[in-house]
Amino acid sequence: MGIVLKKPACGVRKYNNIKKEDFCMFWMLDHKKYGFKKLIFGYLIVMLLSLVVSVCSILTFTGVIGPRFRGMTSVFVFSIIPILYTGVYIFVLIKTRKYYDKLPEKNKFMIDVSKQTLMYISILLIIFFLFLTSLRFPFQKQGVNDIPLSLTVQPYLANDTLELYNVTALSKVNNIYRNYNLTINLEPPVDLNFSFNDSDKALIFGQNCTYIDELYNQINNSNNNHNVKLIIINSNNSIDGMGHFCGKSDLIIMSANSQEQGWVLAHELGHILSAKKECWKYNLMKEYSNECFNGANWFVHNYIRDLRPAYLTQEQVDSIVQSVKNRF
Image 1 (tube, one colour):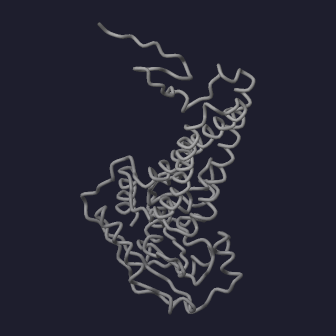
Image 2 (cartoon, rainbow, N blue to C red):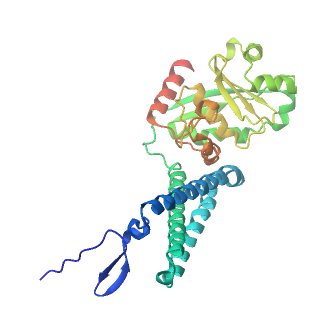
Image 3 (tube, rainbow, N blue to C red):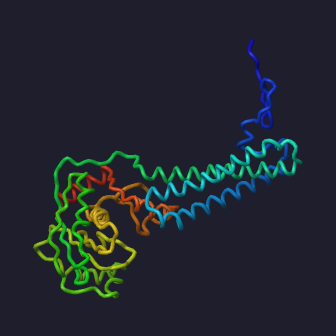
């Protein structure tokens, strides 16, 4: 003969005369115990504290952890925060179980609110951790190209950039594009025989198109119409590189002080070759300008860049192939 056990909505249940907490006690306050008004007050506290702590934790990741640790390391350092809150929640849960029934109702209410707050903080921070982790993995198939192609890049150097020119670092661009059957040929650099002053650099990285036109006309000639023109400048500007701007579809300007010049060149070549920008996804063409300053994009901005993604979708690869064939 089967035994049917009737379980109340919240509170306690009995099974073989053993008293156990109902599962829903872990997820919500008991309205039968505290009444509707007290329940609403309790949940307002829970929501307010959960929101404040979660936002502060995200700001900690953005302002403190992100800048000091690179890529996935920053995510795992951030994971310490939800682990701590989860540990405190488990500790409170275990410690209060022994004497919970002996406490006055007011103390029970405070403990229940504290437990719910710690639990929801842990859940929100774990979700954020999983979100950051998911950004590391593309959810589309990587694009392919079966046709061997090549592209020539002609570097131009100012006088104060000659000693900083690092062909080995720039050549790492091929580590990315060989995945798509594209070889980047770096020509011997051309000396511009002049230096850019601070005013010039401000105009260049501020994308002053009048100045960019004058500069472009100095390096443009009939012999390199099918080359990508790369001007490398000794600059501590926060901008590592710019490509396809001021109507110049074959011009890249890069800082010689960029930490990973090969990856920056690969990203800027993507702009030159008309690869579609991405604002959120793990992608070589993740955009870092204000064009993608939408929603909460600000807190994944440097994080994705630090991962140095080499990933391109099939649509992006097709655009690159067509650009190389038709324009270069």
